[in-house]
Image 1 (tube, rainbow, N blue to C red):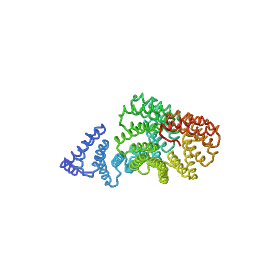
Image 2: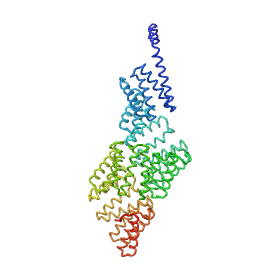
Image 3: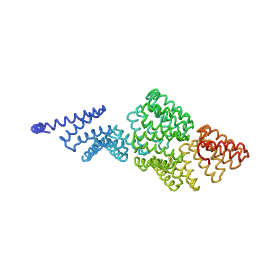
Image 4: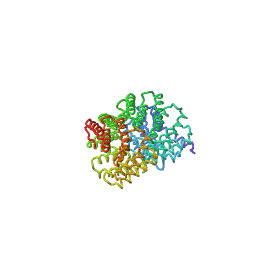
Length: 611
């Protein structure tokens, strides 16, 4: 306890240094006023106040005082939210250097500096630099504030989104589960953030191929949102849109369609007819119709989505470019190559202008454009675009990202088409290794690479290796999707073609029939995908001399391709040619000549040869 003399001495010392006392008081007021301006989004005023507070604190308290670190963090944060990353970074680093010099302390302020610098790096896609900062901040807040404190949940939320961006889906799933448990315990079942957390968790499960779990979580999110906000709330529209996507992936097309339509109806009521979310739902519904082979309806909705997006966001917005890219994909499938090329060119130019050349969305656009040129046989253009896409992804996302695996896979498709089988095999193997490491061994991306690597082996007559990979791809798809899914049918067809090549007609027929039955059940009896299956089975029957069984299959195939594609499409010519070969084998020469003449007419229009 101080004596009267000691107290008077202290008072006299303070009065002899009035500038220190007044300086501290003024710096605190400036900092607090800066915080108010910051939260009011008045960043220029906040910046001026923080700079003035910082100058006083540095003079009065010294360059390495904790309050100097706090003001540095506040000023840096003001720069960060304005996108002035180069100005913000050195201030954060200086603040962290101050905190590191305070012995034995894990200060709350240090956690804020770490968290904010992590957000700065995350915004710049410097994910590897951001992650250790978030983990250090989490450690500080867990020890200082407890595992269920709001700040702990905040840093968990930042870390989990970073894990998603780095494709660390298993860890992201665990972190979302932890966040969910904390909020349910501390806030309760009527937490307004609960539907969002459930949706994010559903998305992580979807990325891992856990589609049943994703559907269950999305349905729970929908139920909670309806209970909290009512059935016509905009949040409900967003959840319905996401649930529709999960159901589409599970080939539950008849269930997905009404959800997309309900989402669209709510969105139009909540936002009006010209809103970005309305455009997004229209685009997704168009994608559903594309998958079902309803190309006319798909094109109409893509055009509507494009119109809404252009009106609400402007013609040069990245979301609009995404819709343009999707419409180009429809035209590519339909072999409307001129229309597709024009749209891909527009999408790429828009994205490069808006985002710069080193961006994942630009890389995706390059990838899709390259696939168009691959389909056209323009290998030089395809190689330029596919390899540039790969380079951007490796530079921006790192060497072990699923998008890098996709690029490696597509460059492998190109090199295989060029007859560079050794290089193609190496690229497929690299793609497979990345997908297995990042996504797990039982993921649709893994199954896709296995199927294409198996096809490469088949072309090289490495039949034993091809069979093993086809079977593994089939097993993965059956486990992920169940026995009745288009991807299962695709794998059955691939395996059947292998057995067909090997002369194992019995096994080939059984698999062709099973693939056909699944496709009819999931896609409908007139889907364009059925044409290949019908042609394969008819060709098998023709080779066996089972002409009576082959003819109705060719007839049905011809009906489908003429309905699905333009009259000048090469697939129409190929079907006519194969059907004519059957009729010729049956000594029905006149009918065969008629079909062959029609096939030649198609070829003449396209300038292509029918094999």
